[in-house]
Length: 190
Image (cartoon, rainbow, N blue to C red):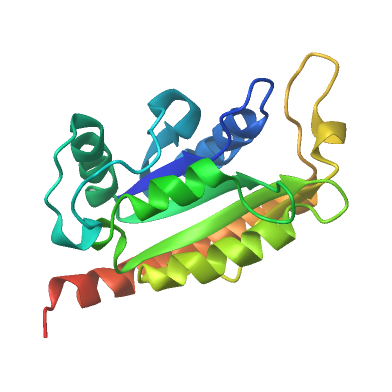
């Protein structure tokens, strides 16, 4: 089984990211391919990057950075759950990514985005570009929720449709496939 870290990117009060992250975590666990851990940036509460040394040096001074580094290092793959704010992904996610360099490398990533009419796809596209600079391989398969509030029932439960379930299964299948291949690359230092 692979270690999958699901990163929920929003931190503001009233956020829906943790609910959506919980749904994709359940789907990943049901697949039987992953040990799943949800990393909620709202709970982790990383300050704006405050390390004196560039992350490429991996000389971390602060305990919060050391803990974040360890969590990301132990991952074999990721799923980023992101809202769309002003046509992009949230600043706390950008900050969390930029804290580290080496820990992200040669790992596959899926993206689950949500928003209004665009379903968070503009945020997802920006995120894909930034992930690739960290040597993360973003999957083409993704899950996008337009008007995600309509998927929350009267009991406050997130209830995606069948199309979303199929998209999640396709994305998870590809994450497994790429993770197998990327492990070979990561382990073979040329």
